[in-house]
Structures are given as structure tokens and as C-alpha cells.
Image: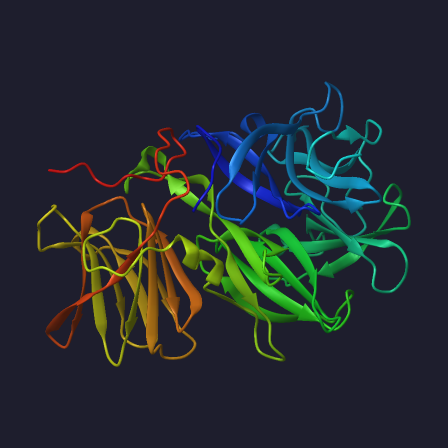
Length: 449
């Protein structure tokens, strides 16, 4: 249901779909460690395949650092592979070293493959194909020039690249922007002023451009300080762009859009874990989360909803305790739903979801707030998903909140409303790899006391 390669964690990723329906994910990967050095621990791309976007099979590394002295000698970061001719092209982030103040020196490179399965890459030359232009972008300390995303130009026969950058005309803490570059042949690029510079974002990471059915565009971007991703829409690729607000809650990051097996658009994203698989551990790079349906209707803001493709992984409804489960509840007033208790047969909540209409929250042991949000409209129904430590909440079908909790023991889900309690039936989740036993396995729950 979630994925990370054996013994490792996942960071940014890209998705491919082959003609036979096989999906491939290429992803940054590194070890579980409290002191994560992205300059030395993200030096290769992992690869996994799936037929349904849920059950992923690891296939080993697919790409790595360049030779000493090259622009990608130190690390290779976020990539964007896509079909090109009979094979594929891939733009990727190369890091050559670190500036005196600690900023990684970043540039964008190109690789080709004669295959379509995410393997067999050969670099185009020994240098980058596009770098930050100091006329518009910061090139010294605080620079950014990474996470390329390339699409066909809607104003010609060429290509457009969106890049995570820092606007040189703005303060560093507010200069996060989407840089723009164009090309006729993928190998020679012209850099232009920013495609989008909101002016209130520190880092605008992992931009995604998706052309919608009516010819308009959707732009997704991961926001550094809030650790979520937001959406913009525009009638044309060059704008004007309209900010649509958060599409995923805090904790959901680095989105990618892909057609599901049924042809509908879905979004996959990363979710963090905590060092030591403990509530006291620091947040760290984590895992690939399960898909959500991407819904874009008219002038309404885009939203993420429950993806029906997950229903095949749900069991029959029960009122028995389950660590991995989905449950639904209709609400007419303030409610709190206890999902776990402090001991196997205890009556003190260790994990609960609460809602008073517009305020939605998750609490851990002793009522500690683990996550909260304010809904745009009062909710009439909640759907709650728990997979190990991972918790998601949907309000009226829309993905609204996610958090982590490593405490407590599975219990019957019990809702308390106006002093009255009742059991909420759940549907247990069938895990694709229930017997994995490594650092990437789904958290198995607290040790019985």
C-alpha cells in the first residue's frame, strides 16, 4: 500500500507508464538515519514496477552519479523521464559540490535511453544542458536549479522546461519560483524570466505541469516551509496563473500525476517517517503513498479524493480491531473517534480523530495534537485510513489531513458525540507485502504490554 525499497527511504520520484500498462517509479533513495546528508546519501535512483500503482516490486538502481569532475559528480537529484521517439529522454538534477555557505551547486542534465522501462540511460555529453541565468535567478548562495519538468510547448513545436529556482529580485526567504526555459531540440535551451514567482515562498520544489482535457494547464508545486503542495491553473502554459491553494495537506509532498489503469488521473506523493519509528524521532525521508484521484471541474479549485482503485485492497466490514483499516462516519456535530488505545484492552485513547465541523484534528497519547486543519466548509462525513503509523483523513471525500502516530494498540473504532459513544465498523486493509521485515516494512504496531 506504501512503498520504499528494502532498507532505504524514498524522496522525490517520477512515474512512467509503458505500453503494456506496466508502471515504473524512479526515485531518490537513501538510508534510514537521523543525520541525513543529501549530498552523500542520494547518489542513485531506485526503480520499482507495478501493474496497479499499489503493489510495487523493487528492481534495483537505475542511474547514478557522474564521473569525478563533472557537474553531477556529487549527487543526482530529482528527475523527469518521458517518452521520446522510440525510447525516452530524462532531465535530471546534477550536483557538483557545495558553496562556502553550504548551498549545493545545481544544474540540469540530460540522458537518453533506447528503452521505455526506465533503464539503459546514457548521458548526453559531460556537462549540463541548462543552468541558472543570473539576470533573473540567484546563482550564488541560496541558489536553486533543480527538479526539471519538461512538456511540449503549447505555442509551438518545441519544449518548455519548468525548474525549481530562486528569483534574484526577491529576498531568499521569499524567492522560491518556477523558472522557465525553452528548446527546439531538448539539447539547446534558452532561459527566460520566471514562469511563476509568488513572492511568499522560500522553496517551490518539484513543479509538475499537467495539460487538462480542455487545453488549460495545472501546475503543482511543493512548498518548502509548509511541507505540502499547492495548485495553480492557467488557460495557457505561459499564464496568467491563478493560485488555487493547497491540494495536499502538510506531510504530503513531491506530487506526480499519472493515468490510473482505468484512465482517470491520479496523484501519488511522498510521506515522511520518523527516525527510529518513534513519536520522539525527527521527521525524515519516507515512503511513496497510495494514489488519490485528481478532480478538476470547471472553475472549482482542484482537489484530491479517495481513489476507487484502493477498494480492491479492502476486506469485509467488521467491528474488530485492525491496525490497517478504513472507516467512514457521518457527522452532525462535534465528534471524536478513538482508533487506538494505550494498552491492548485499555480505555485511554492513544490515537483519535476529531472534528467540530470546520476544525479537523488528530491527537496522539494524552491528547497531543499531531495534526490539524481548518476546512473550507463544514464536513458532513469523514473517511479515515490508517496503515501502520500513517493516518489520512478525508472530509466529504476530499483529502484533508495526514499525520504519523507510532503509539497505541488497535482497538474498536469508537465515536463519541455529545456524551454518547458507538462503534464505527471498519474495512481492514490487505497489505501487498505483509511479511516484509526490514527498515522499509509497514510499522507493525506497538509491542504488547
